[in-house]
Image 1 (cartoon, rainbow, N blue to C red):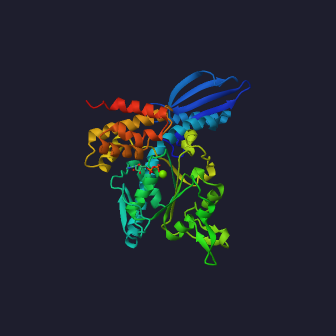
Image 2 (cartoon, helix red, strand yellow; image 1 turned 120 degrees about the vertical axis):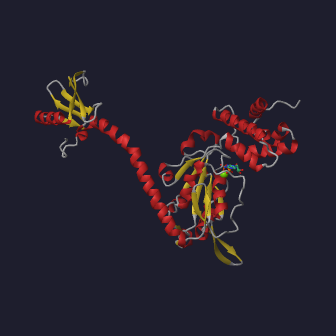
Length: 411
Ligand SMILES: Nc1ncnc2c1ncn2[C@@H]1O[C@H](COP(=O)(O)OP(=O)(O)O)[C@@H](O)[C@H]1O
Ligand SMILES: [Mg+2]
């Protein structure tokens, strides 16, 4: 029925033709019945499109005749307005197309992995991802059997396998460092940590010359050490790093990026294939709204951030946290106790988000409080060293109120 050289759907849009007073226009859109088109007409007298004065539905053949006529009369499709119409089709088509493309990409990756498996060492499955195992090292962290790999961590683990630079941002104690350490622990990779919120100098980080027994020798910093030995380096609190350290890091942010040791006669350090680089930060990017809580943190520029995959790590959900409490403090921590404690932590975090509380409530703090509570049998006494002594008196009073709300005094 349709002439193959005239796909009518490509002709949807707004056709305009200038008049002395303004413009005359026809809008072509898809009508309800298949292969029919709605034509609307109006006049723009200089103050806007004006009301629709003709509104009709035509078939494809009729539309083609109209298009021909309009072209003769000097109507031109207005691409700006037409893009509104076209984007409807593009909008609807995007997700199905993306899903097909992603499925093909996953299948290709799987084929590649199957091909590599023969030549590659062992892998360990973490969440949904097969992670190649390291050779083992004195710096492999201990496995925490109670560690919970949430579904949302899969993307991060996949990025590690793909050798992406991963930055984890989130509040203190949300689990940034432990996520990387637990992936490393299970896949037997050694981990070096370097905290930027302290006395870390560019010498510690990159290396320095020293004199020992009359001899001058070079000592590698953590970065070249990790690169040469194939360790995983976590640059903690990167938003506190000195500019000279960030400059050294920038060189190795590309997956095959090499480090040039200028102080050592421009020696080039190439990354071992197992080398991985991570950063953590509290107040960068999406977390900048909390900068007032992390005094002294620097803003990181977007060009630097764009070299990383930046993941916002939130606290575990109350259900997840209850599970972690139970498995960490087995066999004595019961589900009803754990559920109440996780709810208290959630309430404290909500108060923090409202700025009623000025201190964050970490999973570490909760675990510590729970552990001490099992020893003392007294939540209030346990909260002293685990919580109250670490916060301001105002915060302590507010937290005490939240605890009392959830736990009635013993009869
Ligand atoms: N997914 C998890 N499963 C079990 N425990 C967790 C999890 N995430 C965090 N924790 C606990 O919280 C503590 C604090 O996490 P950490 O990684 O040090 O936080 P951050 O680096 O964000 O400050 C960890 O030592 C661990 O005990
Ligand atoms: Mg940390």
